[in-house]
Amino acid sequence: MDLQIINYTPDWSPAVVALNKRLVAGGMNPTLIFPETPRAEFPTDPNAAIHQEFFLAVEGDTVRGGYFMTHETWLIHGQPHRVSHYRLPLSESVIDRQYTYVSKAVMNHGLKRLPYVYCLGMGSYDLFPKRLAVLKWPMFSAAFLFHARRPAKVLRNLRSVRKNARKRLLLDLASYTGAGTVGMGLLQAMRHQSAPRATANLVPEFGPWADELLDRMKTVYPLLQRRGSEALNTRYPQDDARYIRLRIGDGWAVMLDTQMQDHLHFGDLRVGTIVDVFGPLEQARTIVQTAARHLADRGVDLIISNQTHATWMDAFSQSGFLSGPSNYIFACTPQLAETLNGPFEQTQKTLHITRGDGAGPIHL
Image 1: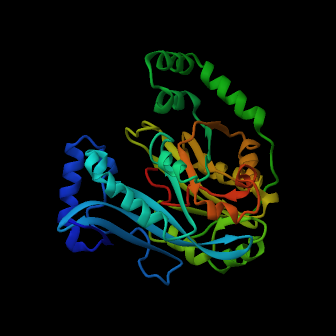
Image 2 (image 1 turned 120 degrees about the vertical axis):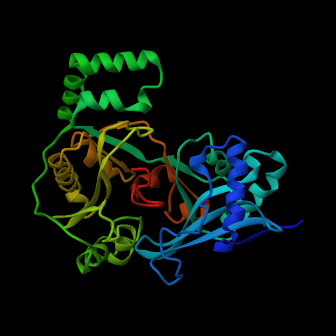
Image 3 (image 1 turned 90 degrees about the vertical axis):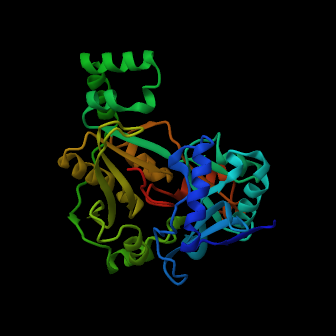
């Protein structure tokens, strides 16, 4: 029976449920299953600033895989281009190799019909990035930056570094003896360089002022997802109480304040996330320090962020942030990389990618 790639409509939900049951029974992580209803995170209207499509790979009335794509407008050297985020490619081949052809069909349909495509997140170079490397996609990890407000509590909860008994013992000793608090606090203080203060105001949404800022900055950043008011209010909607929007000087920051519970990486920490930042590069340190201060005043235990632009990474470092292992991987088609006009190893430092891009701050 011929394999077809079709749009995911609600009438296919029972077949997707059946696929997920087969995948989980075959040993797949239940958190990686395909959405059992086509619930879009972003608008499905092709005329929207951001819009989403869902696809299924089907044989007759059986679903064998699928993926979804989010289409956005990016500014590349100030000019708008349609760029697409390829996400959650899934195939029954993960549990049964006879369906390898499904995986190839899903990738071909998603990656070869559009020139400017990227993937973001992905968790490990041992997984999907291996397949992208075969296609010669350039890739790198966005920096993971953190500032411990309560170092002892952070040492007891950071599960990503507590993977064996010896590490757990050392971290617990550092926590309970106070050595961790002193050591981490000293490292953070040694990096900190105070920035000029700026006026900061909480805002309920992004208005014309965000469009004016983008217009001034669009040639300063060689590549960035269009951060105008329509796109920002789609990504960080006013009716989602999680998002904290802070207008700072001539720029802004979007943040989260999340009490974790048995989180895979952060245990039971209260985590403040600087999800997104934007503004004049000369104000980067002021924006970072103002956002971090706001989260600290709210009482978070740990502040984290993912960044790629060299100036913003420096701003975090000069604000006392440390760097840790990152599983937030950016990869893109060679065609998209070539638009930056230079070796990707150098131009990647000018990309402005944050935790707000791609699928947004999921799992936080």
